[in-house]
Image (cartoon, rainbow, N blue to C red; front, side, top):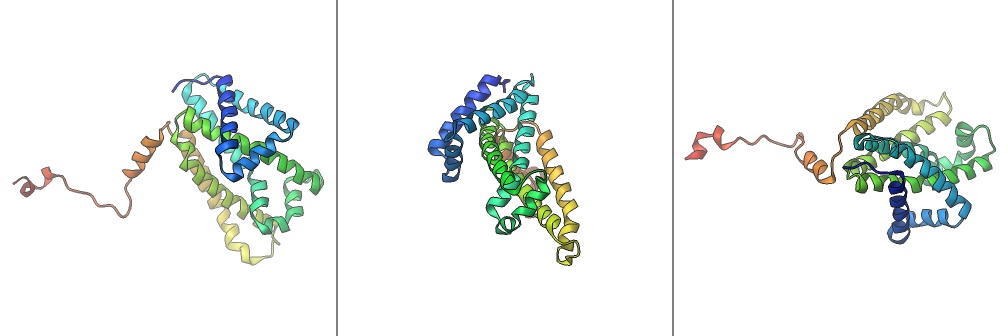
Length: 232
């Protein structure tokens, strides 16, 4: 793997945006359409995405660039979680005002929702690009299933955190969930650090490694050398 320049990272990002706009999922195409429909929104995304890619390109070794791209992608997952929660959870929408007070206490609810929506569009498009760059340009399999699994676990933790934070402290029905939160956070941090510190592995290498992992359903097969009768 060679180091990538800032120009290469941006060019590949533009190509990815164009490809997803034409052949991505319906949801992805909708995100890209909204990003492109306002020139000011697009220019702001370019500026912010360029800053992210500059941090990656500033690392002068391939391994450090890969680590920075992973770190960047984790940050995007974390920062877009609030609006993802609002989009997908009916209870979150009912508690929208309190959620905005929790995360954006310095502004009105309407302004907070608009700001979160704008952030979400830009962060999602950068997330689409960073995962593609990590998987394709850097040939790292951790940008596929492992990051998808991490994002799913983080969304679960974030929903649980919000439910507990907004609930009445005397609501005993959430006591078990509150007690579980530190464990969920610990597991998330462990999962994130495992990915951050893992050496680069292509999709094929990662798949082969997982196939060879021991599970409770596997049995050790004795070799022919250990069974004299098998040699007869």
